[in-house]
Structure formats: structure tokens, C-alpha cells
Length: 338
Ligand SMILES: *Cc1c(COP(=O)(O)O)cnc(C)c1O
Image 1: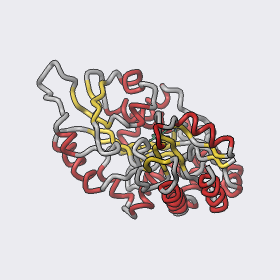
Image 2: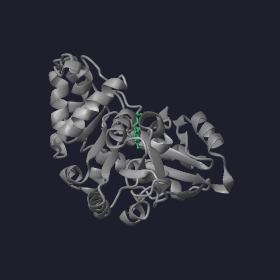
Image 3: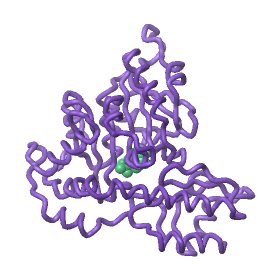
Image 4: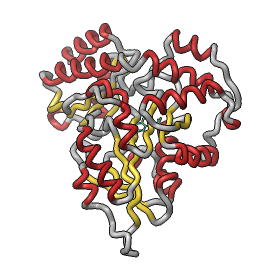
């Protein structure tokens, strides 16, 4: 099977397993797991931020960030296609009692102007108090598209001016970084918190990190405990994270390139109406003649290809660590034969 459902499906490599087996561990709820402490510091340093907290999932790191930055009667501003809104089970309301203001950006990317137009007057008792702006980079629902950093700078200065916090859902931030060659420390400078996933392109079995300043991450530890995310000898998992930061960032370029090759091949095929421009490791295409994505995905499965329906007529492929050039060639042959 060629499995392109998600970049979460990868198996740990032998080098990663070796690192996990050899990890020194301790009780992380007591702050005594040396491998988790090292991973948190390494990730924070990579982005030039003060501190970090290791969590079981990206949903948890996002939800903790929202909880720490908001309060009841406040509002989160984000794009309507955001993972925090669409795919986290209504957690903004459930965990934080906060309201949400949905914007409609370009494939999920919002602008400073759009944010500015949607900040509520804090003196008006009718309106929730705008407190947090959340961006997603790369943007999953937008086909893995990447923010222009100039726009991020504009949003960040607006947030400072208007006393709003700025969070980044960076589940696939490393795919964006290798695509643009942007300095990760620029991200650290402009966001109050950043969530990164180790279990996507980086190929770890489990884990995400929330990055921020010391005071914010201290609050995050309290929220993580309440959510049941305080793990004990989880250094075995953190060791995979350290290994991935050392060995799996540069190779994301291959995932991004293979996704482009798939998109180019799809462009010429009769069952494809259009393909979203590919910037990183996600390919989303629309079926011709109003073809139904559920039916098409089933047809692919019969040919040994796994994908996910991504809307009524759209299909998503995601490239990853366990998808190589031989599989790529095989995939393209099979697609051409449909
Ligand atoms: C995968 C993902 C997350 C986190 O998902 P988990 O499965 O909870 O780790 C967050 N944001 C985006 C954009 C994602 O793609």
C-alpha cells in the first residue's frame, strides 16, 4: 500500500528507535526527566524562545495556548479553515469558554488588515473582548500553503499595538521553514506561543511542543496537568524528538519536492479538475465532472493507494518520511492508468 493519508502514519526509523531505547528518563511531573528537559530546551533554542513544554499531541499544545491566552468573555480571531476551529472538537468553547471570530483568508491565510477590521471595541459590553489571534503555518486546509513572513510581521505589530496575543499552530512549521529558508528565530520573535508537532513530518511516534516565554510556559504546565497531559518517564518519547530535530528537518525538502512532482502529474489527468498550488508536502485536488471524493478514494484503495476525502469533491495526499522515490514512481504510473 502507498499510504498518503497523512504524515502522521510514519514508523520510527531504526536510528530513532535506538535513541529511544537508550534514553535516560525520570518523572517529568517532578521536572526530573533529563531527556524531556533537553528536548524542551533544544526546541526553545531553535526558535530563540525562552521555554517549552512537551505534550502528547498538537491538539493539546494548541488548546493549552488558547487557555493560557484567553478568559471567559474573550474572543479568538482565526481563519475559518483553522485546525483549532475545525478539528479540535470545539475545544475553544469547551476548554476556554472563549468565543471565536472566523475570518476568510486566502486559502486560510489571514492579513493584518482583516484582523484589524475584526477587533471588537473593548468598551462595548455587547461584544466579546478580542484577546488572541491564531495563525496556522503551513495551512493544512489551504493545501499546505505558507505565509509570507512580511504579513506575519504586520500581524505581529498590530497585535502588540492593540494588546492582543499571537499564537502559531505550527504543526507543519518545519515544512514551511525548509520551503522558504526563513530563520526560525524570526518566528520566535514575533509569536507569543508556537505549537510544533514532532509526530508529523519529523516522523516521531508521539509528541508536540508548546514554545513561549518562561511565565507563559509555567502557566501552561498547570493547564497540561489539568488536561491529564502530565506524563511520567516520557523521556523515551522525547528522545525520538531530539533525534528528529537532529536528523529529520533537512529531509523535509524531499517530501515537499515529491508533493510537487505528484501535483505536476495530476495536472494532466482527465479525472482532475484542478490542483491547489503545492508549496510544501500537501496536495489537494478537485475531481472533474463533480466526481465524489469518497468514491474516488475507494477506487484508489483498490489500486493500493490510500488518500483521504477532503471535502465533497476534493482529495488530499500528504507526503512523508515513509514515502520514497520508488513509491512516487509507482504512484504516478498507477494514477496515469486510471
Ligand atoms: C495535526 C495537526 C495538529 C495537531 O494534531 P494532533 O493529532 O492532535 O497532534 C494541529 N494543527 C494542524 C494544522 C495539524 O495538521
